[in-house]
Length: 263
Image 1: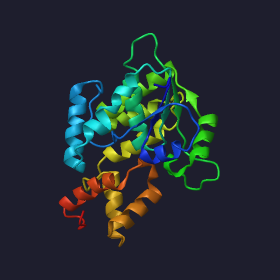
Image 2 (image 1 turned 90 degrees about the vertical axis):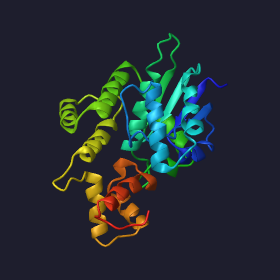
Image 3 (image 1 turned 90 degrees about the horizontal axis):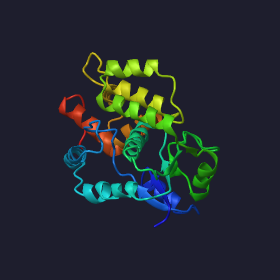
């Protein structure tokens, strides 16, 4: 086993990472903690049981144990260094918080050095959407130029943000965001949580921001799934949602009778 672990935000990043010359083992994070039920205690068996049930019911995925639960054991191996590769969007930021929260449960005296690589842009790449767009050389550039070591202030900020995300009402979250101007090295966290706040508020029609945006796109005359995806991603890449996640919102609109799309 290597002394270094790289936690990657998805299989698309893994493809580029395999082209790098960076040393270490890899673990691909397959969860989508930005959607579905959560509770504050991520270390509990109940947390992962509820996640598995929701993933299975929502996406029809029966491989949760092999894709998610079994790889989690790598976080508890005696690595000397762990590098977290997560992006600026809500999807990645909540997953990042989950990983940091799990790592913070370590109380032994030989805790690993933990680093974060979190890009929100890349030189020369217009309309940057994520590390899955980058090749090995570009990922090595990020590693060499934007990697930061996380310390106690970052773990405190992450713990507070995780609690806010998993337990706060919209009003409480808004107060927290308005009052907090210190984010340590977690520079992308506040914009992501602000996007989440928009998502948990409801308008006069009982819709959240994402539902209303998708309905507006549909009502503009774009009624095919892929067309809706493209317009949504153009304006709201901060959410980092893939087509399966967008479909959960389209399904709700279908069920309300507001749109008619075969999913």
